[in-house]
Image 1 (cartoon, rainbow over the protein chains, first blue to last red):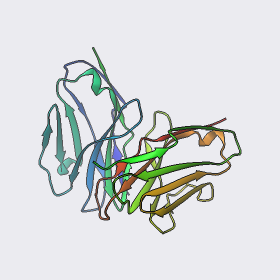
Image 2 (tube, chains in turn blue, red):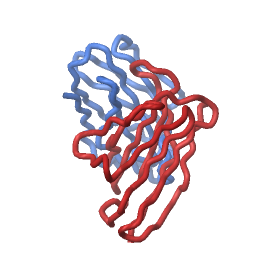
Image 3 (cartoon, each protein chain N blue to C red):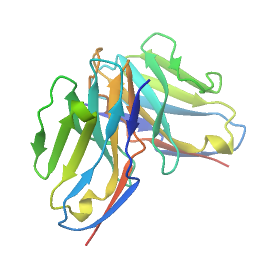
Length: 112
Length: 117
């Protein structure tokens, strides 16, 4: 069975703070892919990143960075110097066994 | 980038009627399309997977006779909610993949908000 756990239901920060969103996954598939999506209030999903199970390199894109650790089955997402526009629901997702399944999501509120 | 559209964006229908939602890939051919449902403040739940020209594969617990999926062409999939009831009110999102193979990125549509009164 596959599972994605985002234990943080809601996070509230003040602008310019750094924030890390946790994602822990379970799968028996040896080849799998991990994703992060942003869902702003409009509802449309915004693709942020995809990693495959063979690539454990961390990635940085502007204020966003991702830490993938197979040893702990985690794929955490950090926003540096958060901004109000970062307020959204963030979903971690796992692709394996021909399905993309989503975690419960973390609602991030960034206050001025 | 690859664009997926959905129509309508919002629909209100009366209980007992059927409503059709269209999902189109605008600039690529979608070999596989997926339909998700999202209730307020909840995650996206996969309802079914459809390959062009084949019958859709439904997830456990999803009624295939209630949620009819047709993927008649490489750019169009439709979801028909038959005999809709208030509990079917939800945000329906489709996604499409351009090539087969594991882990290929899925391109998501903007979603359709269905309200059944």
